[in-house]
Length: 366
Image 1 (cartoon, helix red, strand yellow):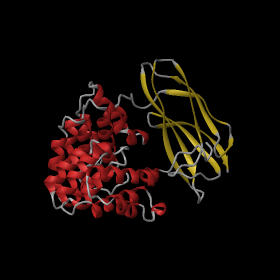
Image 2 (image 1 turned 180 degrees about the horizontal axis):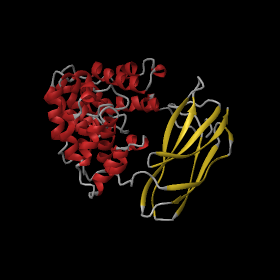
Image 3 (image 1 turned 180 degrees about the vertical axis):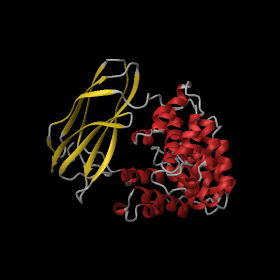
Image 4 (image 1 turned 90 degrees about the horizontal axis):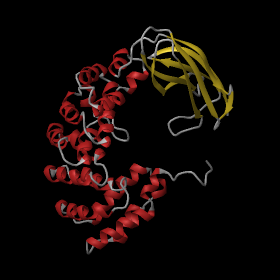
């Protein structure tokens, strides 16, 4: 991808054009709104700010230019909500509530329930959990029964112990049990949007309290397709670690009874931005059918010369006695914001039902 084709930075969601959109739409519904002052405040030092800083600065700019009465300001923002032309940009409405609404609990809960339909209130609700945990969680438990999928998702997503782009909820990291009623209510939700959140919530818990998750989902009805989907994705971190109980819960038949006849990574030497291909041939040595969860791990060379292991999904297969399977997957080796590559030999493992059964590798030159 060339620089000209590269996607704009996320922070450009709050660019001058969108801030101008906020100003003009608010002025259209609130006579007397000082659009010029709002724009001046919202665009101050804009180029130097990241996406979350821009989000907060926009909310602060609304507070400076809307009525000082919180209820009146909310009334304007509620009319503005459906007029905002971008889902993530709409999160500014909930950010306003997080910053200025904690002294108005009931009004703020109503506002977040409304605003999350336009742009998720997952970040905002955490401020209320941090300041008034039991009262806020009680509201969220009720939200898990809401008719609107955005509100139901907020119940799960907002109470995740380790929500990305937000602060951790240390109370729930230590003891995740308070969110159990939310997860139970949503364990077979018909909305994929909600189910993804429930799976991510449970996956968060596996990082600190894996046994809690295994015990909970172990009692769920895996004959329900929605529930089975959640469990499979919730246990992904444990599955990548080869946790036997997690593998069993998704139907894996345990220790693999196979022979690996071939495993290779080609080409053996690449430059950054080029593609590697993994090929494997396996054969069953079992007397009965096996369900195999097949992953591969790349040990990425770090700056200091050590390596960091990253596990990737390859395939799940049912292998009959004496049957053979050919597996292949390819990926481009390129830098991400979360991973910078370094030159050197990269060790690669073939992992079946949690066991490493073959190894190969490739050399990366920058």
